[in-house]
Image (cartoon, rainbow, N blue to C red):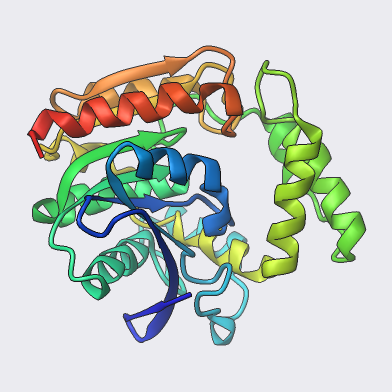
Length: 294
């Protein structure tokens, strides 16, 4: 696969569909490789007239690993924040937003429809207010503004999902399959689908250190709610009613803050893409992209 050289690193990316179609940039979430955007979803978008671009964020998958940055000290990060200062981090979400723009530059794409999930949804929002001329439409799913007034993630899920896990291949895969069952919502859990995904993910690139640095990056810019009110691109916010990480109030917060944003709450969806809701997600994004007539 090709790599985009941007910000002194390399970003692995892949395209699906006809290059003359409408560009759709997909931005994955915390610790997720481009595989999080399934072949089925990407092909569905391509069949609806999009040139789909998915990529590995920095520090994950086959993009550059920032090993020299070391592991973040979260106690120190929290202490600096508590003092009212900005902590020094290996990189920030703004840097990751710059990576995404760099992928578009590598493909000579001036403007794209942008779709971000979870942390990728935060990056997508940042792109929309820092690079508004590059965004045709914005879709954000299972994401947040990091507004401190929002209800927190469910602590029992956080403790189980982010507990230490074995690095041994089979043990890791089986444990992650169990953890996926905690966040899928009320839809029937497809254990085989989760196992297939987690196996591909592990075999392609097992690199937990990058997840920690990406998590630290979410400390800056902090609460982006005051900034997203400047977004003018047609915006669609999709959120699951059963999301345990970013509760449904987070999606409502985004939609209420971005002028003209449309909110789609998917009953029963957690913090994962159940196959049953893919058609609704695709249809909703297509409708939002059509608002610009492009």
